[in-house]
Each structure stands twice: as structure tokens, then as C-alpha cells.
Image (cartoon, rainbow, N blue to C red; front, side):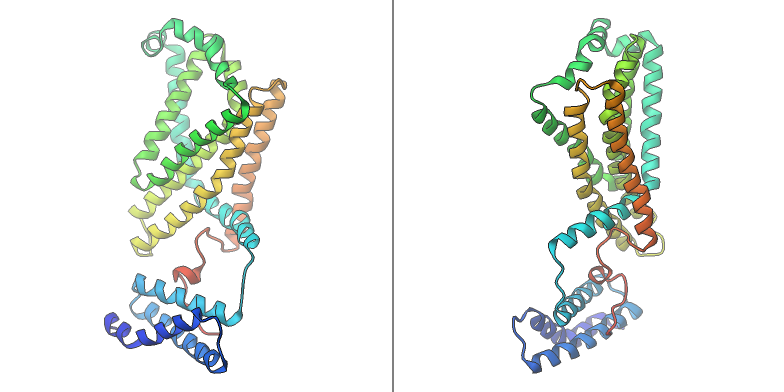
Length: 331
């Protein structure tokens, strides 16, 4: 099929259908014309999809058919339902689909953190080359803990949230390179391992975990999710599978946006815990229990709820009618 000729022949019908969907009022003749053009355009979409699936044309016709269907049925979805669908269906589905990439990101982070912690914790010479002995003792005795008591808790929470959001956004935006998330994971893993190694060498490992675990479990997991989602986009570009490369990359990128938006409130919760729970006067076991509960709740949401909606066919992508992933037919 000659796509250009097909467009030239049917463009007047599509333009007329577009005008009808935008019209505020329609008389009986206009409604009949709208129904007829809707059916014809649905057939055109099916023809294009089955003979020469040009992505731009398919997307255009899919959107046009979708708008015409909404005009015919008069369907209007309240804003709160869109929000509910996003956070209760699309977000967990997108998180679940990125689970194996998140496991890879976790492996990279943990490997670098453990290796760094053992190396600097056991090798006095290497540790002193990075941090002089006097600064090590200051870190253990004062600086590590005092970091969590900077200024007002609300201001500190905002600062932490902004910093973590920036790190996660970097992983998301530059994930398609396949390089930046790995660098970020290794860098953060080495820094965490260095702190743990210095604290452990001076008998401060208990303090390290008491002030890291309450917020760190959730905070680090969110960073790993952002990096994993970014790596998944890179993989969709390198190995797209059966769909065309551009389509596979577009689908992964749209799901990535879902993840990025959905992680914002989780990062806010993590910042709240770091500002108000980690430095609080609560017993260490209670602080760690609060952080662990928040972390487990996120994992249940990601893996439990995510698996449930994934089995129901939710992908975290835009609706199929909007992206043209499935042929729309007249009812």
C-alpha cells in the first residue's frame, strides 16, 4: 500500500472527523456523519495496521478514533479516577515490569558497597590515603551523627528530598545511555562502603546501621528502582525484541515516566523519615522498625500489587487506543 496516496485520498474524511469531534453542538445530521466517519476511520486504522504500520499514521488515526469514540459515548472520567488508576494500577505495573533491572542495579550497588566497605575497613593504609586518621575519628565521634541534626527538621527533609529526587532523576533521564546509571550506582556504593568501613574500623558500625537503616532501606531502594527503570529503557533500545526498535523504546520510555512521577511521593516519605525518625529520641529498634515497615510496604506495592495488575494486562503504558498498540474496530 502506498502510504502517501492513502493519506491523500482519506485526509478530507479525517479532517472532517476531527472537526466534528471538536464541535460543541451537533444536530442529527452531524451525529450521523460522526458515526459514519468514525466507522470508516476505524477501518482505515485497521488497514494501515495490517498492511503498512507506519508509526506516525497509526498514532494519528488511533488518537482520532479514540476522540471520536469519546464524543459518541459522551464518556468523561473524573480526575480522581485518573489519579487512582495511575497510582493503583499503572505505577505498580511499571515498577513490576522493571523488577529484574532493579535486581541488576541492586547487585551492582551492593557489590561495590560491600567491596568498598571490606577494603577500607580492613586496610588501614588505604583508608588513611582517602581520609586522614584525625578526620576518621571526627567522622565516627561527631560528624556522621551530627549530619542528621542539621537545622530545622522540615528544612532538612526538603533538602534530603530534593537531593534524592535529583539523583533519581539523573538515573531516569540518562538511563537510556546504559552508562550513567551504572556509574551512579558504583559511585554511591563506594561512598556508602567507605563510610561503613571507617565506622567499622573505629567500632562505630552499630551507630552506622542505627542512623542508616531507618531511612536508607527505602531511600536506597528508590534510587535502585530509578536506575533499574533507566537500564530497562537502555535494554529496550539495544534489544527491542519483536516490536520495531522505536516502538519498544517509546513504550519503555513512557513506563519510565510513570515510574519517575510515582517515585516522587515515595522519596518524600523517605525524606520525612530521615528528618524526623532517624535523629529522633526513639529507641534504635523502633526507628529501624519504622523504616523497615515503610520499606516492606513499598516492596509489597511494587511486587505484590504490581504482579496482580501485571497479570491483568496492565503495563504502565498509555492506553492502547492512544498509542495504537491494538487495532481499534467499530463496535
